[in-house]
Image 1 (cartoon, one colour):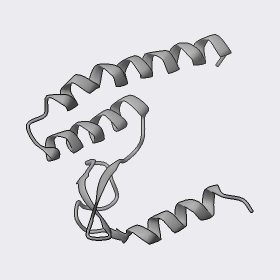
Image 2 (cartoon, rainbow, N blue to C red):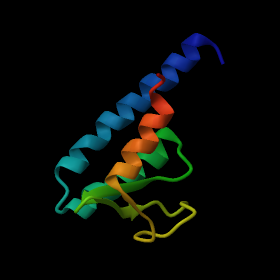
Image 3 (cartoon, rainbow, N blue to C red):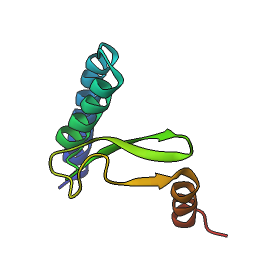
Image 4 (cartoon, rainbow, N blue to C red):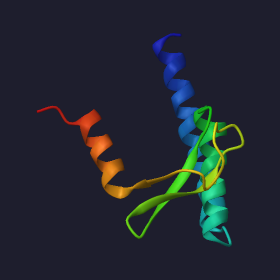
Length: 94
């Protein structure tokens, strides 16, 4: 794939992401917003699976999971400090 073709595909994805925002803004509930996010990530960005986790009392709880995810909604939770520690260990080099 040439640079122009890659840029065109990236521009198309950005446009589709922008097009999805009004639906998220007009959603009638938090769950509807999470569902719109999951659908947009899977269909627009081409991810195999997606989940939205929300912090609640120091734990990230999965609220919505894509149909293609290898786990069910609400079956996994992570302490906030576990998630942040894992993220930092992958991204910060000392």
